[in-house]
Length: 489
Image (cartoon, rainbow, N blue to C red; front, side, top):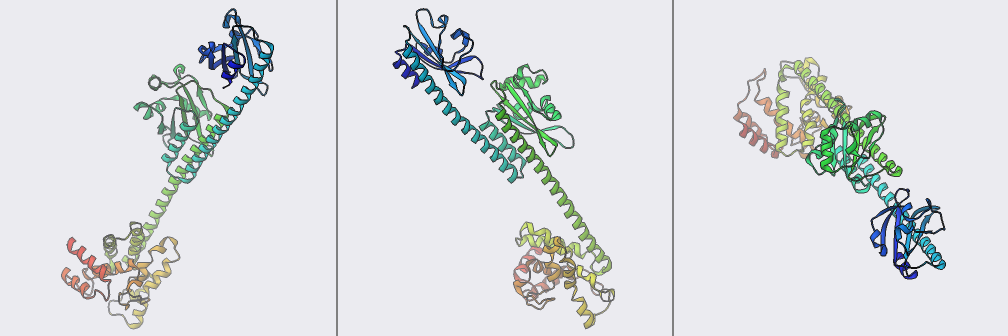
């Protein structure tokens, strides 16, 4: 609109608009009309356009005749913003340009500069907002997700979408080998680059991590520190510039963020600040993943230690009560298989298994004179023996890790018809784990040799379970159990 208006207002033969690149004295013309449409895309030094070496506010300059041609007049009006020239308006005519036309050109130049300034401020604000949102997106991903690959994918998506980067890699430092592992890459066209070929043989990333500072290479083709293999990949990918940012979290080196561009680019301070913030989030993501992995390992080791202790208790009881040797191991596996048949959630099986292992742990509180008695127990002795589920509850309930495993040790002597002990629970008042275990426990006792009798046959034991179905045992569980045993016989 401005160039078209100038053509009419000044009856000009040509109008063009140019802007400076990076504050130097070179104008790149973005738009031209009339005789000057040939300037679009061209870059010219000031000395090609006018004799003065520097332009000032509120001054126009006569264009160099060698540029506009003899017999023509030309004026250049600077586009000034806050005392700094961002470009110029060039007007040419086949006649002398009058003073009032020169004033008009200056006024239009002021309007043009103001318009460009407003648009620039808007674009800068928009770009900053996009970068802040990109940083927030990564921050949310890092703080809310323990999957390191997801965090890295979010990082590279934000970098490429909002920071003018064409391709990027994340390299993670292996804590044991102290070598780089290519974690994830984006924006590459060749398989070798996607596989991390640029990183594995690139000493620049190692330098960035070793010195804990950025490494910037404006022209990779001229960089002698990278191998021939890397140079070949650089050429195939058409990569020009490179920036490596070390990933440091809590003072420890975690890896490197590599950024590649396919055009010449400098490092803007604001851009770099954002990139360093993104790199800090990436380093934190690695740190979080390592902490979570270590926590998981510690948790698994703690569970293993608990389970070993539980097995130790069970073995100690078997050594004391020789009648039950091998019984615990058999009923544990059979209880878990039956629970799976009944559709018990997989996540509940570890607690059920521990409960089965510890089902008779309460007998630790029964005196040897009663526990090891070769004959029938007196009423008083039986009263003490029947308290072993309560002893189990007293022993295990103070241990948080075993609270989910109490159902079997505490309730496995309860009966479907309510005739069991210690609380006389009935039907589905009895926890499912205890109902499952009670069938298995009785079955194993029947088919095993005891000091006072030989083991029963499969059929005799099966008949006993059937006869007591609905009295001692949950009918639904009995049906599934007998079917399973027949299939496995």
